[in-house]
Length: 379
Image (cartoon, rainbow, N blue to C red):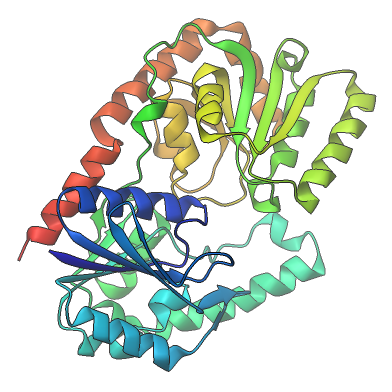
């Protein structure tokens, strides 16, 4: 079967959407399908190359500040042409030029069409939206921009044969069902088997978070929680990000300030750690922390579940529906649960055991590839 996939980020770029798209397409290629990925240009990468048995085509199309850039007509012509020789077209995510540019030409594409959602814009107002005039103005702009997108393209979404969603309680699932009458197919996300660890008892005394150093990941929240906890006197906090950013430098200054206020604590802000070593960090940690202001279905939490590492997370996306941890709203909440898990290994291990069971049954990459493969063969 010939499969054409459009996605805004793919190898060598790295983010949650890229990770999911990569393991799904790699799995399909290993099952004998011919996979072509159309994605954004990356400096230093060729316009076309083969990767893990797949063909990658990179084009100068991208989305920034909720605006789409690139030659729309040329991109449409490319996809229509490639789709003529494809059995299936998979568009990954809305609110990206790689999908939104195609709505006008969907009727010209005769192969099976699948929209793979990874959540959608959150139309709710949150406290962080009022942190500055810039944040407030950008929220209003996105309200208008994405509200109009979902309003004017109602009939376009109905042209897809299937819409894949992250979770039955995900905002995109309920939005598409309520406004378009589209019953999504729940695929969920998954984590690599490399994270799987049955040893939930022999954990080391540190809490960990693996996220890029950007405001949305909100490591500031984790630092404040850690310093407010009593556990911070016994445990270490390890933050791992891909590279140093302006937000990383802000966190360094904040950590120094918190040291002066609360006294010495063991905190590491790491960058450039290999994938293999990062996995070991997660597998050995006593607690996984997530402080994000927005997530849809965090792969990091699934990785913690696979590693048998209990998590404490802000109430974002579908985190509240995942076994293996607790949800918090304030830094004091997170500090409280850090103290509980630090002082009560049996509580921590009970939740970690439930997470391991759920991961093996529902959240492996193999299971997700098999579900998608069967869907492609239908009809």
